[in-house]
Image 1 (cartoon, one colour):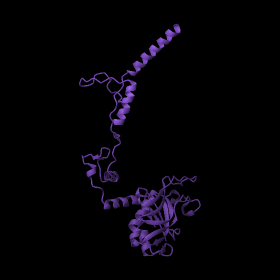
Image 2 (tube, one colour):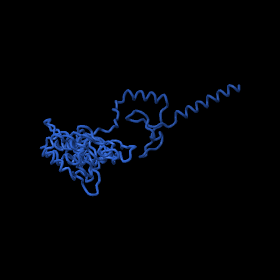
Image 3 (spheres, rainbow, N blue to C red):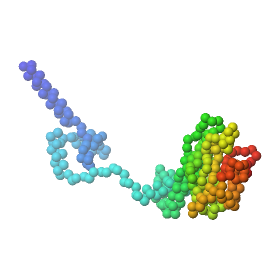
Image 4 (cartoon, rainbow, N blue to C red):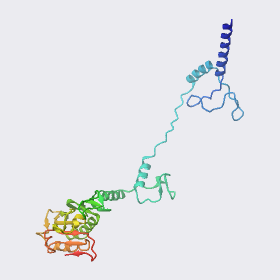
Length: 306
């Protein structure tokens, strides 16, 4: 008898719990997505305007009603929340303005200039402007020492166990002022800049713009001056000197310092004085009969030219 009473009480409790769960509040169905609206008004409770939301139907009725609504309701297109891409023309204009150094004061994050000008209304760069910027970019590619016409690469500082030798800020130069070097020259920027100025302002004009290559006889090397045993370290050992033995023209003609020390070579050698701190060549000291020696060694008495 007690077991029967316990079973009856359990059935009553289960039915009461099921009825309480079934009649628990449910959110309203979303008219677009077909599901419940989270955080919606509670069925049977008040909503703005004084209306009352009907209580949720029983589970069986809800399932049947949902099936009927799914059959009778029209298909609702899914709402796409992705932003539309910018027009291609606007993207190109913004990219051009970012690369332009002629458009100061632009706040590209807001899509407008600081003065309120709409970027979409700014005209894109012309072909002439694009070509000019391309030339500027090409001129700075591979440049060293902060001079576009000096081509090469910066290299690691050069140290030496020999006192006085080494180049703290070394570069390896391959061409200056559009004239290539027969071999890459390891020097410091003082020599690179002086050589670039000399070729651009003196040597190239003297050859009527036909100079195409400098034959390099020496650049950085840790040795004594003029290879004399016991002498001071040469400026070559400090990266502050360069030797030129010949000049090659665009037609292939080669003018060597030893065999062609003519009027043109004498002139360009003389005008190197002042651009370089030291100039040595044929007739100077017997050690430079076949090449020009140029260096940027600091001298208290000014340039040393012989």
